[in-house]
Length: 74
Image 1 (spheres, one colour):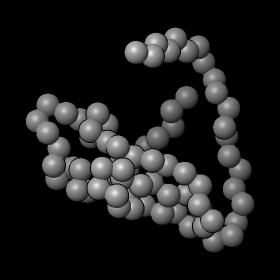
Image 2: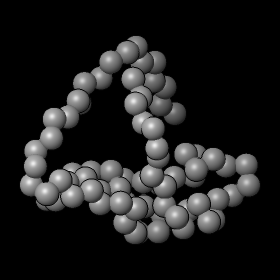
Image 3: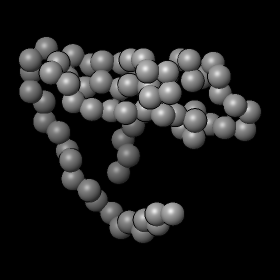
């Protein structure tokens, strides 16, 4: 279940959003763990979108996959 209440987007991508495209369609983001926490990186502009520092605190994480999926790869 998607619990996202606010999305992160690259400001440069939003400034250059093509007509008819949503920020979700236009995004080229990578998200991953770092030594400090989690970083969102824009692949298109090679810039940091946000880097969340956990300040050394370990947080619980839900990595389960729930639901029925019908994925078609083309």
